[in-house]
Image (cartoon, rainbow, N blue to C red; front, side, top):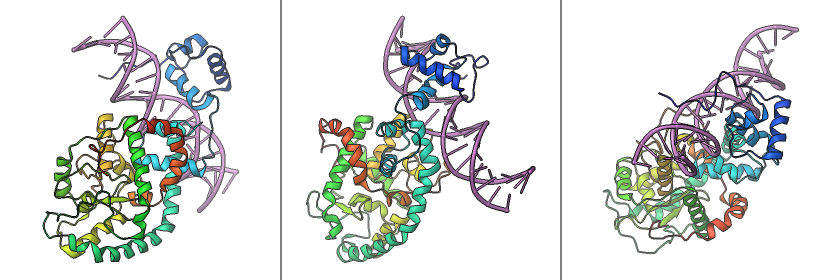
Length: 355
DNA sequence: AAGTGCAGCAACCGCCTGATG
DNA sequence: CCATCAGGCGGTTGCTGCACT
């Protein structure tokens, strides 16, 4: 049995709002406020509307300082970056964009931004693949020898946070990593959490290692003695640690070509919507999904899977499509400014999250 | 000019959460 | 502790206008 309706559906008007209704609602709220009770408000005004409808109309259209359309490039970046990070939490994303409503952001993403990104991505994909090919060469010279034919990882030198590769790209990543940590902290504060169930993740990742993709935030907890706590950074948008690399391995794990296969995953195609979130999760589950993203985790069953296809969502945009488009810095230029205070008073706990 | 398909967007629906009694 | 309720949220629907044939 479903929930009782918030109002009498038969007696309320539905559909587009008339200018007269808008004027009534706006005038009343400007003079008296909402009174903290949206349900009772339409009766006070004499509107035959559902309270929820009034609230939505006010928040999305009548409220002062609402902007419609004309999203800037910076706003695009913020939306994309946050979508990658936290998924379709439109209210949170909209909160970072003054004058924008969650509905607006949601519509903008669904109708324009995804397509815009996809079109842009097509032009860049070839160049990116060429760069990836070059990195494969570099990597093979230094790292392939570290890979064994079993699942047991060799002990690497215990150099905390040191890049494994001597690739110049790695050198300037520290600030990037710190920025990710800042965002991570913010996300925790916004409702995320980071559990320490990495043993389970480890197990699942070891058995689910095909078609793996990399989230933008690939933090993981301090795993175990078998996996070194180091990071590889393949480009400006994707951070990978050894643990994640492990996920990249093909099931055959046949030494020399396995890392190549892992690197190939940068171009693999996974439905973005599925990667970031799966529908019908509770908030708790979504937050767990967020954790998984930060772990760089892959859980085929849970829906945060990178690579196991599911059937909800119809986006043709892939993870690879999006991540290659997102530049991290533009997001922070605005995002960080609005959230800086929040970040500063939130101590980073290395015991929980190891970079 | 008429029909069709599609994109954009406003609004609705139903579920979840937190507050309150 | 439980039930109820309003607010909030994300997903979905349906209307409108435009482009194309």
